[in-house]
Amino acid sequence: MCRDGSFIVPLKEGNYMVDAQGGHTLKQNVSVEKGRVTNLGTFSR
Image (cartoon, rainbow, N blue to C red; front, top):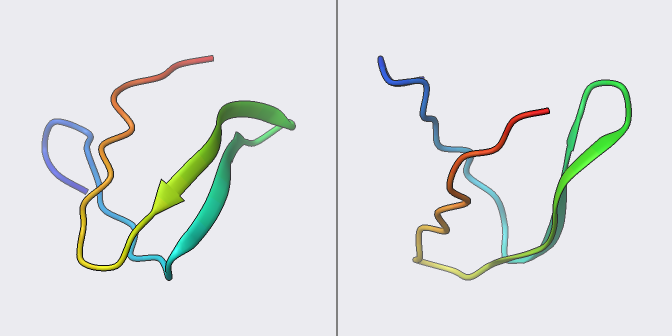
């Protein structure tokens, strides 16, 4: 994790959903492509 709170999670290609503890869906249909960084921006509960 960076000092500003950002972080990188290496994933295989595919589509993902980002959930928070407690079952809150933060982002749906996140597309990950090989060799590309996907910026999800910021989000909060």
